Length: 227
Length: 227
DNA sequence: ACCTGAACACCGTTCAAGT
DNA sequence: ACCTGAACACCGTTCAAGT
Image (cartoon, rainbow over all chains, first blue to last red; front, side):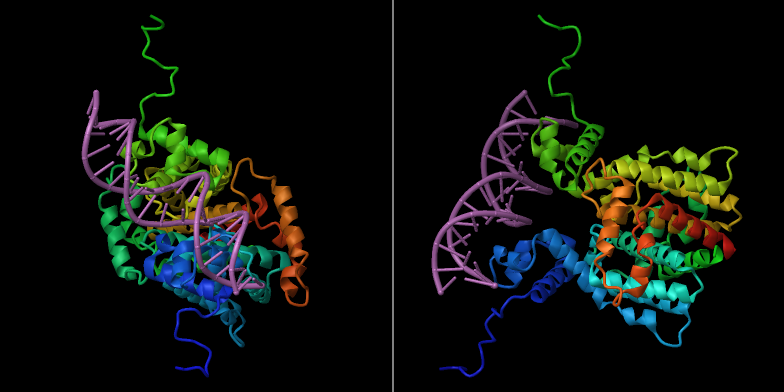
C-alpha cells in the first residue's frame, strides 16, 4: 500500500532502451576508464543480466560504435553553421569544441579510430564541413576532400593525445602532460637525436591546444592555397 | 644417435625471445585479424604456456606496443634521408611507403592510435622529418610542429581507412572498397544531405591513395605557406 | 633465468525457458 | 518482445614450483 499511484520508480529497474544502455556505458568508461568497459559491467550498472543487452546492441563492437556516436552528438555541431561567422572561424571553433567534448570522455577518443565513422552525427559534421569549405571558395570535389582531411587531422590528434594518458577523466592538465613529455625528452642523447633534442621544448608541446590550432590552421591554409 | 652434432632444431621449441614473441604475434594478426590476438594465441603458436610470455612482455598492452614498433621499423625510413632528393618528395615517398607497409598488417594499423608513439622507430621518423622540414625552409620550431601534424594526418588516415575493413590481410582492392562506400552513399536522401550526395563520387574515394596524397600535399602546402 | 602447473577472476555470446 | 537462467569457450594475470 505504499505509493501505488505512480508506477514504481525508486527500484533500480526502469525499462531498458538503447539510450539507457549507451548512457550506462558512457558512465562506466567515464568512471573506470577504457578497461572498465564490458558488456557485463554495463549490464551490472543497469541491474540486469549481461545477455539482456543483446536486445539493444548486436555486439560489444556495436556498443562501442554507439558510444562514439553518442559523444559526437554531444559536440556542438551547430557551430559549423553559425550565422554571420566567417567559414574558417566556424571550422576552427567546431574543432576546438569537439576536442573539449572528447577530452571529457577520453576513453571514447580511443575508440573513434577503430570503427567506421558512419553514424548520423558523423554524416552531419561532414555535410556542414563541405558547406563551409564551399563557402571558402573550394570546388565541391575539393570541399569533400578537405572535409575528410580535416576530420582525420582532428580525430587523429585527439586519439594520439589521449593515448598518452590513462584515458580516465579528469585528464591531467595540459601543462602537467607537457612537463611529463619534456622530462621524457631529457633522456634523449643529443648526439643521436640532434633535431629532436634541439626542438624539445616544442616537441613537448605536441599535445597542446596551441599545436592543435596550429595544425588545423596549416591544413586550412593548405586546402585553400592549391585551389 | 640421430643428429647429435647440431643442436636440436626440428622440434617446435627453439628458445624464446622478445623478437620471436612479437613475430608470432604479427603472424597471429596477419592470419586471423585483430580479434585473433591474445596472449594465449601467441603462446600456443610458440608451443608454450601463456604465462611464459611474461618473461618478455609485461602485459598484453605492452605486446601491442611492440607490434606497432615492429611494423614501423619495417617501413622504409631511409626514404626520408634519400640523397639528392627534394625534401617534399622524400616526405611523400615515405608516407606512401608507410601506408603500403601498414596495409599489409592492417590489424596493427588499428593499434597505432591507441598507444603512445614513443618507440625508437617513431623517434627516428620524427628526427628525419624535422630534418626534411628544416631543409624545406621551416624554422626548427615549425619543423617540429609540422612533423607531428604530418604523422597525425598519415597515421589517422591509415587507422580510419583500415577501420572500414575487417583488418584481415589481404585487404580488398581499393576499387572494391570504393564501390562499397559508393553503394552505401546511394542510400542517403539528397534532401537531407545535399552536399554529401552531390559529392558522393569523391566522398566514396576518401580511402584512396589519391585522397591520401591530396591530404599530405595540402598539409605540406599549409605548413610552408605560413612561414 | 626461464619455463610449467594450477588457479583466480573475469570475458562475449549462445540457447532455451519464462512472462 | 524482453528478460532470466545456465552454460560454453574463452580471456589476462598471479603465484608457487621445478630445473
